[in-house]
Length: 374
Image 1 (tube, rainbow, N blue to C red):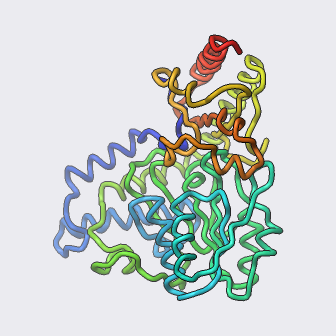
Image 2 (spheres, rainbow, N blue to C red):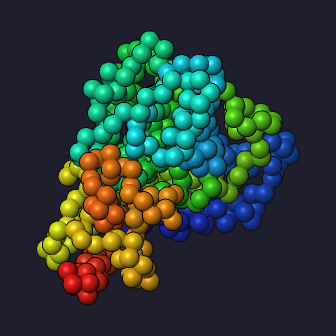
Image 3 (spheres, rainbow, N blue to C red):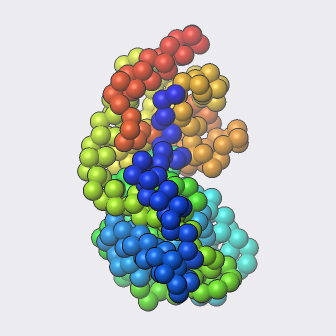
């Protein structure tokens, strides 16, 4: 199996696994306990908090741990809205459901909602965001990079708009943190969603950067863990794993960017040489170095994936939407016709992939399409 579904989830790095195993075996105290084992667990949690903070250039006290990207997004959107009571929210048509669905729920409860569109390259239109601003706009939430196309959004420009008007700005950076450099200050954002399993950490753990001084309403109730916003005994092994993944990412991001970009470009150009009718979905350069979303004229990508599922791990789009046989809303928003979206395939490389694997993938896909008369 050649694994090219790293936008859905990545393999756990061996150093991360070792750190987690050590925590499972010997760091089993409750971080809220005042005895030596509790203090040891608390120390591990706070060390990981610092590792996460260092990766995105913020202070440790601005990081709170969650169960992953979905909870972080819900807490950011729902927590801010419930804290404000009423108002107007701006998001985009291409957000992950863990942003779109809370926004739509809030709309049903009386909040105003604007979903801005994207251009043909898959980028949010900054002018449309600007035009959507109102005197009662309380939140803008735009993802940093799209999970299906890998297209990087104009977060810095939107952040400047938001800051000038005192509007809170959240970005779902689940697909960017750990893959490319992300600095919260440079992006002018107030909240950042982080998902561990997108960059070689464990599943079921994530974090939310919450700018100092910003208040959220809890969406879970219990004791006062994590600034009173995420009750429940901390997942120490998971937090340790996330911290280690952040430490490794901080050290190796330049190397990972160079490696995955080389493989992704090799894959794209190789497929275009071997196959006719290959179209890139997304921006030529302003996309994640590891992400390739293509359409193949005249091909049903679902049937193709079924044929190659024992040799190549790839995706029709977002893994969170698997099982739904309908055109991608992201590609539709870019202007693609239904048949083009249904012929799309997402291939996302990772740090452990090799050039030999990429050559094999090109041959496997070319042979599969040749057998189909292409």
